[in-house]
Image (cartoon, rainbow, N blue to C red):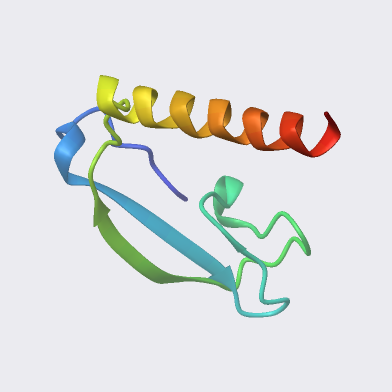
Length: 82
């Protein structure tokens, strides 16, 4: 049985766990009630877990760079067709 305790752990120390069925090799983050969603087997093992940090929303600099690249692409495409 997989319990979700992510509310008790601060955002900067959450773990991403990956489980794998030993019978059909299906990988996933969740196996409801400990059974593989692909084949129904209960022969499931945790194959990895790594500490992750919450992704921060992109800052204004990232937005400006993205907009500049899209505008540059539009200019290049417009020059090709005009």
